[in-house]
Length: 166
Length: 263
Image (cartoon, rainbow over all chains, first blue to last red; front, top):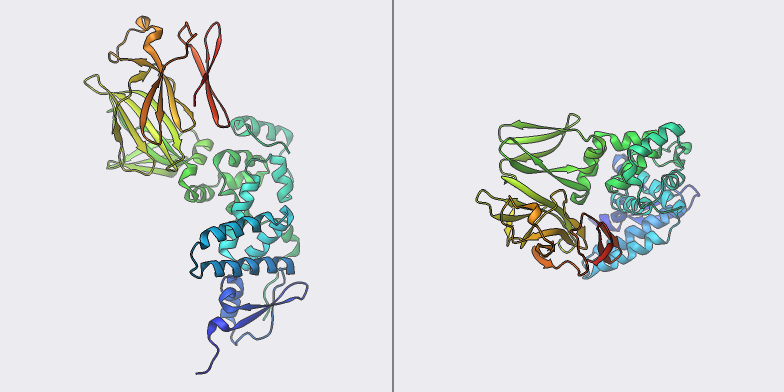
């Protein structure tokens, strides 16, 4: 009868570096991987949940994003504008490496809205860039022979107008 | 109980699912370029599952295909993804009862039915395609001769259910190969004033019968613009050129290059 309600319950998460984060269970619900883990556990989870693939920098950003979005959504007027401004700043504050690292973490933790936002952000970054830039960005090696590449490029010549120089 | 760790060597690359998600937000042009990144990206982009995901993203990435449906001069609109037509320009249209399905390489990319916004035409004079920023929609403009020889102009807005007949053009586009030049929210043609019907005598056309017609996609209205002074020959070739906010149409005639300020 005098139990703590769900929204007040805190979950503790531990990053690769061993940093502990206390997270409200309402926020933890957005970390679907964590939530699934909690749901699957037989007993109440009391000890810190270790996240073997998530670093402090990423978890900190993710929680920041989620906390802010929860705040924006809690019925204040004009939240859309503020949220859009926050999102723009959030995206701008990261280097390309940090962006990729965050996508990895958000993907692992299955944070749907954030992941969608990050994916769109990356799409915006690469939209007008050259093929070489995109390879570097994703760390991909070209496995075409020069002949194959030339053939493919010729077949799709129209698509190569207006590309930004690296 | 421990949460599973992923293979640390896999962390360097974003997994295929994530790559697919990112790519699905891109319009067709960059997407086509990125087939050159590597062979596996080529497969991803060409895969039917990805095509479907991409199509799902946004109607703005899709195209309208204005295609003949059957023998009776009936034309219809098919909603399809640019992707499928980039990869497979050949396609077949199958009729099943009242539905026509457009097949590209065996997977269906679009449907039109008897109820879809079809247009019956005797003679399609010109077709224009453009984008209206104010409403965020694509529009198709069809200029048609009806059976009594009258010029009719119809506009279709992507997402709508029917063609809208609008106050007709003051003239008809005389270079029928043109699909109109889309500049700054308007579609533009060189046109012939006071058309006497479909069978006009080309050799009787004089310069004063010609003008520019500009169709505004936002208001669905057209206006005439006289040709600039100084042209003394009928323009044989014209080319649009856009630079930021200023749009121009170059008219190349045999002896001189005339620059027309379009907006």
